Image 1 (spheres, rainbow over the protein chains, first blue to last red):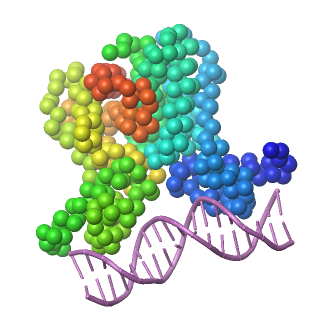
Image 2: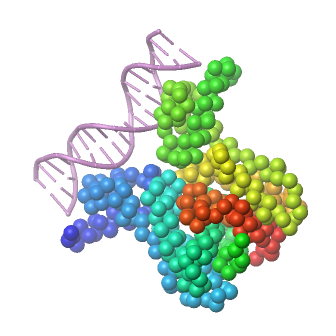
Image 3: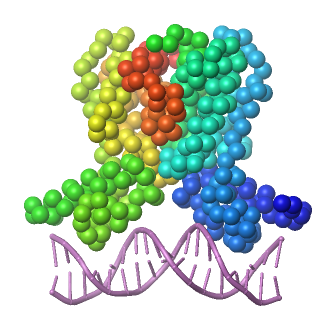
Length: 190
Length: 190
DNA sequence: GTCTATAATTCGATAGAC
DNA sequence: GTCTATCGAATTATAGAC
């Protein structure tokens, strides 16, 4: 399909609104009407460009962790570097809508959970494999354990908003969680 | 209010069905009709006894971690004991509906998130304070960090169902995560 | 105590005029 | 490309008969 500039502007406005609402309210809580309203377009435009609600969600989910941007640190400081990388993505002015979207929706939406699995098996596990120079099976196990900690941090800080976890500055969290990630990366596995 | 035996049986049947469905489908995905159907009663009975959907949810949320049942282990094995306690609650035949309910609903429901905060500030933090004999502020910080790991484990294993985390037996997970919990309990804080 | 009937919304999706 | 009008389904919730 080819699109004119006009339609392209509408498409991106819809997508931006959808990302924001899916991230804030999850899949079920987001309605096509609200997305259209926030984007300033007619609800039928959403259907026209994205067919249905699932198509819109599928387009909105596009999480790149950009782990390749992480400057290769010495092996023994990899854990803290990873923790810092994730926290810096999540914090900041425009907080990472992609991860919040998956975090909020994967509890009740199969497609979101699948996307989360894809991200954390392909991107995280493959990064771990490259960084450690280990086989894919060991990389998957280590990446899985790393994910329990990093996703748990995101879940408690941004979704549940547990007061002591919210109160800690990102820098302090990176120093607390870093050694744990390091342990999962290079420590003994049971 | 006083209730007869007949109404009491209906009430508990409704509550059991509600717990199961809220745990599986979250707040938005659960409908009063489905709850009534599973409980084998008329939908209007649900309204009669629990006023509205929020009242039903409020009644269904009642999470006791039973940390007082945990036999006091030596201080240096507390981490693994806690990890094992949580995993043994979550695993097993009838898996812990209460935590799944909160886990699945707190992403998009404010009441569920509040309940999760209550549980992990009161029950977990107070347990940590007693077990370590430290002040409430330190206990809250340590309990918060412990929660990032334990909730993250539950989230990745039972909600996202990350393959490598699902594949590990509970015993292996306890041995992997135990030292981390131990570190948050008794290690240095930044 | 239990159930029928239905009100009042809301949502996703479609058809078609312009 | 954009919008109006609307369908059909599902939902929470209420009123009232039995």
